[in-house]
Length: 409
Image 1 (cartoon, helix red, strand yellow):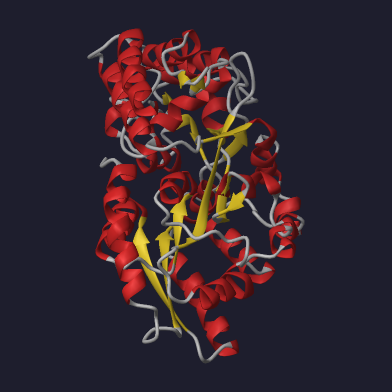
Image 2 (tube, rainbow, N blue to C red):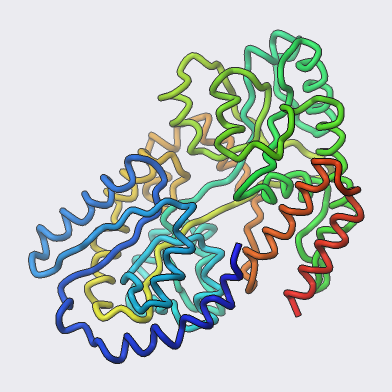
């Protein structure tokens, strides 16, 4: 992946020139909104928000542009460089630090009142606040948990899901002997690194230690060795490096795997695509401690926007209202970011959702450091080499850590 921070540095000057040359007189009533494609419902939901807002504000036009996640980062970088950035957009919250460093993100504190901020669950708002300044509002949030096939586990004599990695190996071994895949392991594309963080964190490791990369620590090597041993022993599906997140989730939908790690969105997909698969949700397995991956996506405003007031009104009067937050959260299958939505019986009384919310006290988030995406890619490449047997865990992780340290400097 291209180095986002350095690409943005090159684009900032172009954006500033366009912003100063085009004060927005011709498009003062048009707000361009780029949304990330979560599902086929995403565009419909945001167009509904826009329709409601435009009915109440006929002098403002809101244009919704739906972009796939695979293309979103490059699309925004290209638009910034070309001086055609949207007014507001959904982004991965971890991208914010680079946008802020390059003066591309507009601070939202003058736009968003304390009352509006008070609508959010603080755990999910905090990652969008950098040096005390609010640059984004969380639009989607998730934690991760373990999905398990109840019938497959029962077939091999287990009525309860494993709670530790040792138990995962025990159950996966029994599943393998019965002709099933034991543990679905991701080894391809976005979040390959995150699938390993579960083992890293639960074994007591961290991504950074004393200002340097922590991915070559004793705990990190132990976590990578755990996954490699499971591959070698046939406890995963064959060749995990050919499986992205959707591929691993498909194994669960097809009833072919005993356990995988994923987020709350999979619940809705299971109901629609695999209603006959009998599954449960449990905590991420423990090593020496409990851990999960917390993720937020945010809506940000671009500093180049010539319609900041109108864009702000769309955010506070439409996108981040109780009605539309509930609609989005229910249909897309995420965790609530609004306190009011979390209190809704649809969420508060859902036992499966509690498997995720109970993990929130143990959630770790991607660090807000420049060049994080490049660091994540470096980690993923090292893991792929380990999984393929091209490098030993210690050597691969030490080399990756050295590269990350050079980025930190």
